[in-house]
Length: 164
Image (spheres, helix red, strand yellow):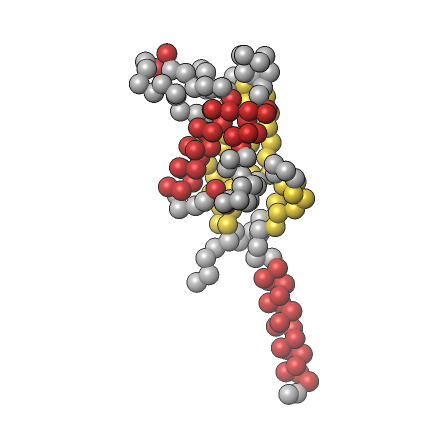
């Protein structure tokens, strides 16, 4: 092999390795509940899911009489709603890279039930079946669009395009 061909092959291999290194979503600084940062390459497919809240525990009741349960129950319902929307779009909860969570103080506690929220959260993220976790922010708010809701969540998903 000529020296020029060897140099060209080496350059091609180096560029291929560099391109492949940039073609994955990188999750950094893993914590128990979430990652500190997630790097999403510019060419990744992305999906944004609008804010979702819980379903009523008594859906057949008149709207003014519907109840939604405590924070844990509402968080579980909300993540099930998100999961349904994500799967309907052809994605998976393992593709969630960011979650923004809005919690209202639980009237029974007088503050947001962060523990109840986390208990339900861990049923959807960082499990044996679905080990990925997103980055996230959780804030307490005074109220949400639907009376009785204690939680609303919006998520962002990313995945690498399927090879053609």
